[in-house]
Image (cartoon, rainbow, N blue to C red):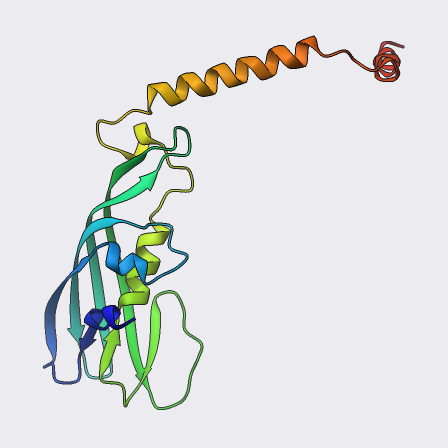
Length: 179
């Protein structure tokens, strides 16, 4: 987890106004998260923080590509990604644990913002629920060899199902709906 320390933004010494920070996200970042949907990628992150007296406004722009596995042909492909997100960081004296998706609460004593969990969440939420080479990739189509194998497997299964001898008890049940 020492690797993730570079994704902390020290805001205590910043003047009021806008400040920009650049980060890179690669496979070392994803290796720190065991259950990440993305294992490899080459992403550039620009975080623009607007510091105010009692809060921070963080705007995230994440661009690049991530490696995904096609759900149809199981080949890996590079999927382009472009994410824009915003987070509000408020400071409070009380121990208020009621954070929302967009509002993050920090203590008045905190001096840095750890954006690694936010980046992890934003990137993993951007992964489509159904990945397919031809839909998410650029100028890519599914592996024709794998598609042929899948088609021949389906043909075999359907011919086996047609050739099966049906148990006479089930055959009798089919006649029920004809009455």
